[in-house]
Length: 279
Image (cartoon, rainbow, N blue to C red; front, side, top):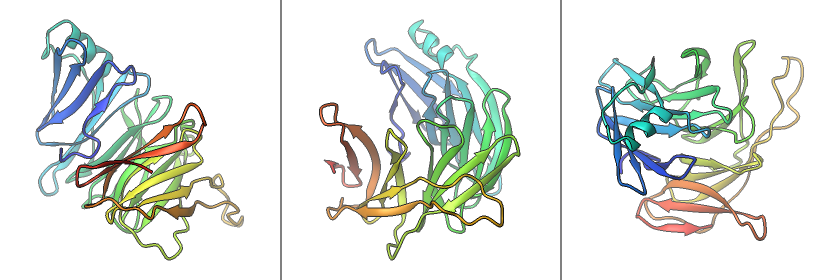
């Protein structure tokens, strides 16, 4: 339970996967069969799967200035190994990516599975965008002046992502042809919070962020594309409000749930005290 977002479903809904020390476990919900992914040499610190069910990515911790690896796995082969009852058959590792020092804080696939973002931990704090098929870095940047703690791509476009952390939210525009990546800081007003986790609405208009002090903060995340140095920014991400109700011991996870009857977006919140709330 120490890995943020450590228990996840595959997009098909038939399997769950989670880290167990340096191993990743994939489990068939119906049959109980399992498969194991073994290549990390230290504890897994973050994990995610692509929406098309083709890839799984995981990052790890390491000691000192040692590189902390990111692994890209063949999720379809892992599922086949699981269903065939050969949990350690292998043949699943596609890429071993080496860039970050000390810890990989967050990983996430773009909506079309072409790109992978990786975010380094406190001693690294770099944001890197990778080509998934080729296994090479496209572009990167320091994530922020202070520590960044989580990162996600938008749901419907592969050229924009959001990072959050200590006292900031940043919306990034990615140009893979240049290649370059450009951040725009959200207007926070007088609010100063450590943001630990985020989720993005289905229409990509808002980000809902969980804070260390227990609030959920709502941001409008629209922004301009990359402008020339002489052109002013016309549209910037902006905080729109925050919840009056707090979760004890901070917000550890958030998820957007769309009400099919009304079309309204509700936010499911997991608190550090073990409670779950709708906000």
